[in-house]
Image (tube, rainbow, N blue to C red; front, side):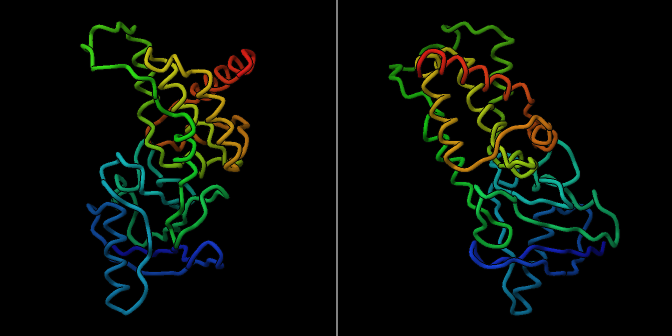
Length: 247
């Protein structure tokens, strides 16, 4: 199948970007990233600079494959990452517009690659359990109700790709932070640092320059792991409780 591409090219954060047009012949069974591999092989053979883009596992696990495809983070399919999107989702002769995540907190490194270190700094501010729990205990020795375990697991599926930020008109990171806070606040291991954690992570989120949440729901609609909006409600509850307790 013949595909027309309009790809964002930008040398670095401080340079002006532009769209460049390319033509690629791809198999319908190729993933979107494999199609970009073909494009880069063409560019290299022509003595041109290949398109920089992020990728790692190519299995929908790592969250690296950050592309806005025809205006939607990760493309037109719900519940998949860019690496899980296949060319059969498009038609012969389609024009596909590909851009990087658009957010001040995610500065462009080059082309489609952005710096998502802001997420790492939010996690480093408190998104972990640091108490000494001693040796590992039997999995069944700490009883957790199934509904609680299910909610914690659902939040834990967040891969930190940043699609929520890219989809939000305010570039808010509330879905990401809400997922991480919810995951730990639901489980016994996360209780000792529960209130200090949420305050530290929200403060870091604000310091990184992410926008506020106005509940449009775009983040959950575009999340490849379908994290629900309920984690944002839980984040707000956790934050208000912590502040009322003087944290």
